[in-house]
Amino acid sequence: MATSHINGQQALKLDAAASNVSAAGYDYKDALSKAILFFEGQRSGKLPSDQRVKWRGDSALSDGKPDNVNLVGGYYDAGDNVKFGWPMAFTVTLLSWAAHEFGKEMSAANQVGHLQAAIRWGSDFILAAHTSPTTLYTQVGDGNGDHQCWERPEDMDTPRTLYKITADSPGTEAAAEAAAALAAASLVFKGVDSDYSTKLLSKSKSLFEFADKYRGSYTASCPFYCSYSGYQDELLWAAAWLYKASGDNNYLSYVLSNQGWSQAVSEFSWDNKFAGAQALLAKEFFGGKKDLSKYKTDVESFICSLMPGSSSLQIRTTPGGLLYTRDSANLQYVTSACQVLSVYAKTLKESHVDGIQCGSAHFSASQIMTFVKSQVDYILGNNPMKMAYMVGFGTKSPTQLHHRGSSIPSIHDQPSKIGCNDGYSSYYNSNNPNPNQHVGAIVGGPDSNDHFNDQRSDYSHSEPTTYMNAAFVGSVAAFVDQSKQEPLQLHAAD
Image (cartoon, rainbow, N blue to C red; front, side, top):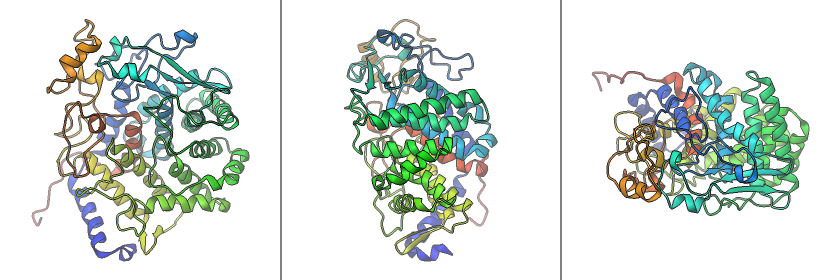
């Protein structure tokens, strides 16, 4: 067995993780449905009649008016009321990837329709924001102004400032990620709504051409979202999705001629897309495109940097076993890494490849999935705090989510306006649980010692984000057929 190639202590750890998983017996279908439900609580704009998150109301119905464009809709990024287009597009790409790779599991959990609605809510906004071949609106709302206030989106009176990129003021990362999102979404809707799918792919091609022709790093959303990895990762990511969606060999030629851009990395995030692009292109390698071998090598380097027991380990785990990349919203890196690992393990199995080599250690696809499951289970409650880091899952989860709409009484319960400062004094500074439970929201997570303070003010650990949840959708989906809907009874011998 491949386990024999891992040092003895690490083999025990992986075995322990596997036994903890079976003992935990989580309802992964429930976790998946809640993770998708979260997106309805993040909606901006006019809410539909089938809206399930009832504490939310219509909001930001004039977005885009200063420029005479319709930018109503899309998602609030996190616990604030700003619409950041770059991470929003990444969210759509991740959700579409999950839908594409784990459609069977989504169907088994009865989540296909809800997931498609979540994707469409974001992709519709990206379509609207791409108002000309060389114009993309990338942000609605002034981040600094918004962060001065603690108010419901339904009451919002902070500036809805518009930000855009053009040929004269480019932002390659944002345009390329928008291209990736629409290409990935076009695959999701291919057999569902062919006209919509065709429109998505057409706009994706336009955005990619804009991103590639007018190159320049995206700075508009700094200091909230600054590009540290440059734009080459987004261009590769977008080209890989466009090749997958269109079959056009020009995009394959693009990734082949730019293999030198690809880097071995240890994180996959809203800023750094290399590992995602590598996972997509490695699948093409196994499908017969042998000249894409560098992407296979690089994605396996990514996996080796994460797997406990690897001789090239870069990201260590907490004492409780959680991957720990950095302190601020660490679970975003956990969920995104798990999505890549889940997809790649599936690729290995489908390609009848026995695993990957990390120096002297060998990991089978099953061992990679055992590790992914340990991370998913940690998030769902198998951790030293014995709490889920998903709001509303299990018997114990965060109660003081750093989230404006969740922490202030619903406009349906308290229709009178709650002003900017009133929100701070009455609700932000309160020690009471949030009046509206934002079911499915995944928080930033515990610190490096597995400790979590359930405090609204601790935004780096208590705030949810759309891309964190989106990556969790692609991580937990792989396990829905292993759902335990009743607590597992231990054998008498145990």
